[in-house]
Length: 242
Picture 1: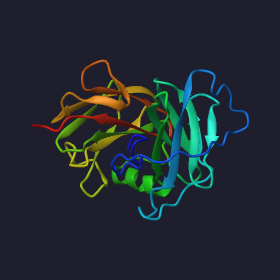
Picture 2 (picture 1 turned 120 degrees about the horizontal axis):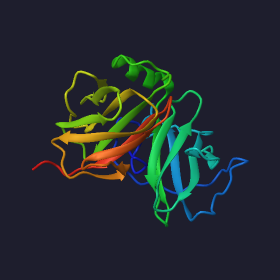
Picture 3 (picture 1 turned 120 degrees about the vertical axis):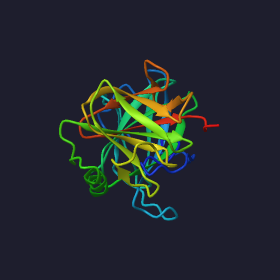
Picture 4 (picture 1 turned 135 degrees about the vertical axis):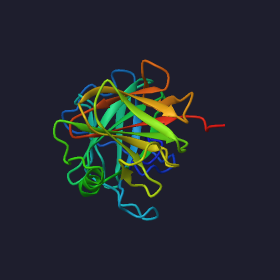
């Protein structure tokens, strides 16, 4: 979903491109456009809306992580955030009543665009409850990994940190009973301590590369930033098993 080239709703919709939009800057945002930046254009909608009749979200606060570089989405759910060119950046998405997201993207000089579907707080609370994890998250965060393309038999291992493992079922629900991915090619960890963590990708996955995340310190490892109370997601491209 990913993260921006596809809907980031952790239901793992295919990657899609979207049209560009207008910029709504928040008063007080600083140093935009002075560091060699390019626009990341987002279309923000509710995950609960029908695919053919999306409910666009106004007033989503989009911020480059740990900066005052922030924008608000307009009535059409559109926001444009200037990010450093050709550098992996993380940005947050916050709106009352919806789960907060922490997402990565590398923006090329010509800019990038994508669609993000936000889960309601009630919906993500239900998913956490299904794997016996508390929500809202207190002192921890949740991380998710999605494979492009999705395929079964892939395992995820949290390296140098602790957390509770889950995979996404064929019915698109979280489960802590599975031992590897289904054809959805997705899973993650709840109750992860904030900071930078690595996730090892194994099982049927080989020679993966990280188009919406940073490579770890070993092959088939991805680095993800975890923030208290947020859902962090990363996208990994892996060739289909022969």
